[in-house]
Length: 161
Length: 304
Image (cartoon, rainbow over all chains, first blue to last red; front, side):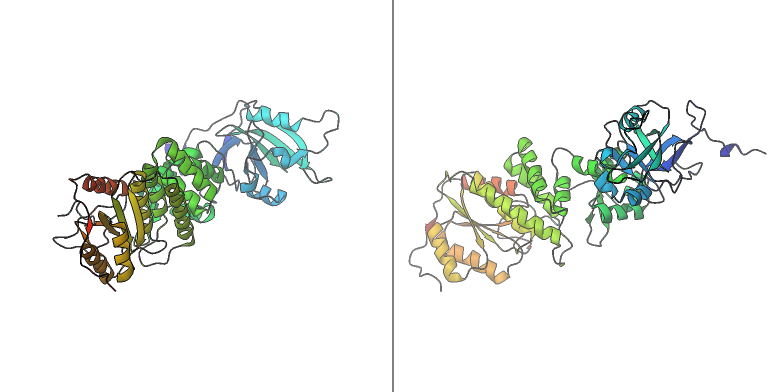
């Protein structure tokens, strides 16, 4: 017999994909007990807040990512991104995202304007995009970046792979 | 006759939560809350005599609210730390002093002066803010408390320097028996500041004067009121002050601020309570009583 208590409503974005929760620091997806209120703080690392994003944008456990708001300020840096970019989250928060990541080849024809993309996504233009970025002070190192909306509060999620 | 009943505790009332309650309010485990305190220095709980943490309800509420506005814990803590309970508060001051942030502590008091008098800023922000760093009795003061005490002493001294000149002929002599880093020492300085700002000639000295110097001071200043404060002096030192004052001066009144003298069923020395503002008002009432001039007793040689 089906156990009705195991059913729970699932958020779905306009593209028909599930919305999933993840920790803004360790990327772990919280395992909410059916009868327990969801916590805003990650119960695993205690350093990140639980955010939500579409399943095709949300980071996997090992993927570095940043959260950027409409002013292009860094709002969160995952533990993996701290290691990748050699920066501590407390030093990176409220700094401009271009202090850390820039388009890999800004002169290439048709290259997405990274900053305009982040502003649009953080402001609610919901389509995820992919682009290629590099660390600011390094050449020859490139990362594919998928960018999509996340929250709350609304911001842009930039996942590096 | 006592002016106010002696209080068993000098702690100001505040809404506090134990660790489990604060953690439940934030939706985290007690270990997570303790780890934030270690890693970020926030929240800033006080400690009971038994070592248990007591979290300020306003801090926990500010943090809970900040979680809704940010994407990570460290940003939420920065926001909550800035907000505290209002434009300036003991909580914010304590947080700044705990981080040795002298400039931020100065700014918090400047903000307070925009909405409070100097006296209320001292009594409602400075003193409780520093008192929040005081550890259990008998323990050596922490580095944070030492820093906070020296900062507060400097602030009070600067405020005293710009106090107006005395406008009354009477004087008040305060004997302070507290030690460096005692919160009582700050309360004594606060009382001195309040009295000076009220136009009363006030001098504060250590309670450890020998008899010769004591007689010289009393004979020179002829104080109308002698206030004893601080709890580090031996009884014979306090007795020497009381005896010396009454022996040297007619009609001088001796009063106790913040429990300098031991309790007795019928205390002979009136008590001024624990608040500098309250003590100032009581002293002013004494001074405004029908004029009883203070005179040196004649025919007495200076005690050696």
